[in-house]
Image 1: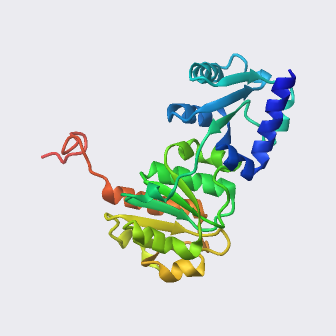
Image 2 (image 1 turned 90 degrees about the horizontal axis):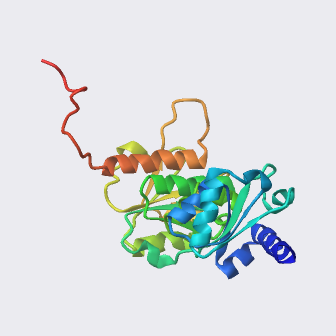
Image 3 (image 1 turned 45 degrees about the horizontal axis):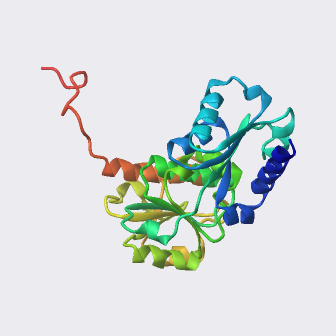
Length: 275
């Protein structure tokens, strides 16, 4: 029991301390869906813990078996322990420590679509942005030095497992990121609330990096000054701006739409005009 207590104490420290997560090359994921995504992606699950109410849940039982089969360890927790470990008021009944290394700049080699988070501070937004980039087929995500830690447990949870699917580069200084991207053949488009080109009128079929900025202040001046283009989403309504994750999703999926190759029957018999 003391051995398990030491492990639980370590999980609590990993949840709270970025430096500890980096030094050990791990992150903490909460919830069967996110942990399942890690397992499916081949990420090494070091240890898994489940609350009493999870006993007998098919999804949790399957995770326990998968983790043990892969050489990891799984531990049941006593009542009330999960609430002291997780970082949410109402935690999921399963949590895991998973091996995860941040990517280096070589992840940008040959990249065709990169999403850049410039001083995004909210972990929920950061995770949702990683998820949107993954869904739209991005090659990588870059976080500038002022961006929240993408392995923050809230960011991991908001990514819905996408953090295990594509490389995330962190810590690039805002003043250097445009040059770094250019060195990898990626012109830079920054998103601005107003005054930019209509995002839907841009030809996105070539390699590109899309930069989204801080929730309150937008793109840092250095990046906006150096970027190849500024794009905006026309807003006919009265709202001043869009949430950063929503705006990124709109632009990313316009890029995906332009690049998509339609396969299958040339015409649907249900939709083809009738004589």
